Length: 312
Image (tube, rainbow, N blue to C red; front, side):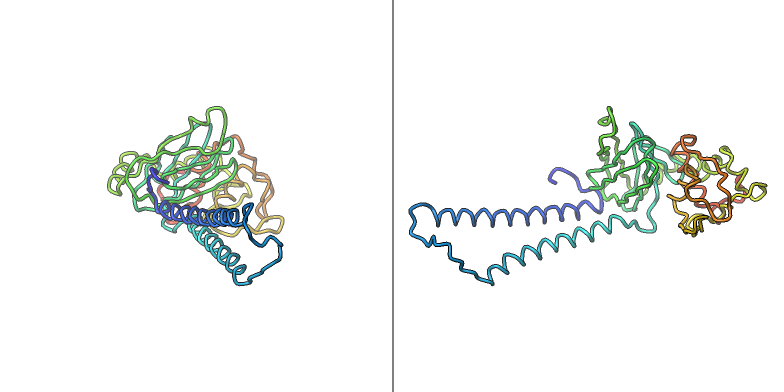
């Protein structure tokens, strides 16, 4: 890891785990090779040693060379599991930034409506959760200085989170071969102090992502079926996000980002109980960036965060 900066809260912990595993493997390798050399010298041709092959078992030695390496490798496994759980559990106050990967660019959308291509601005000391999907093929977002990477799949949401610790500009790569110009699919993460990041957000504000989603909700005709005054028997969406939805087939699902996404592009897969499967699929009719904006709106629809004076 020498030469690679440690710019996130995970970097030092991952480096520590890597170095511990490397050291343990070196110790085991040296023990094996030193033993081989000792026996090769001791039993070399011409030496007067016991070559009868008679077994001289020593239970204490056997237990020692079996249990100590076993305990060390189990310890490494437990260490890695603990770290993996931390990396899969973003804190509740993490700022959610939506990411769409497409051949060959990265599109980032901040909650405040700021949109970026191939560059992501974040602040030091504040956890960031990236909710990601692909518009075409499998990509993989990797920031080596943060020691984080995650596959990004079409039609599915994956996420990762980190807390940047050092201001600077760090490389961002696609770590999955995604086509002819895969090598061009790079970018950078600009880590700023909280004050500088607040200034950047203010300078690039253009209406929140949820507000854009509200506009799209009307533009794509969603309001015609799902608003209160509609004559269509369609589910109401106020307060839907995070609730439990009974389905027509008897199952129950949580209305999370995955469910809302699939309800837009695959509406016949999970039909809400009590409703006919009349909603058309919007697959290939709405790009992933617009779906993310719709999700941002649906997450606040019917809550106190939704402005009562906003245009419908």
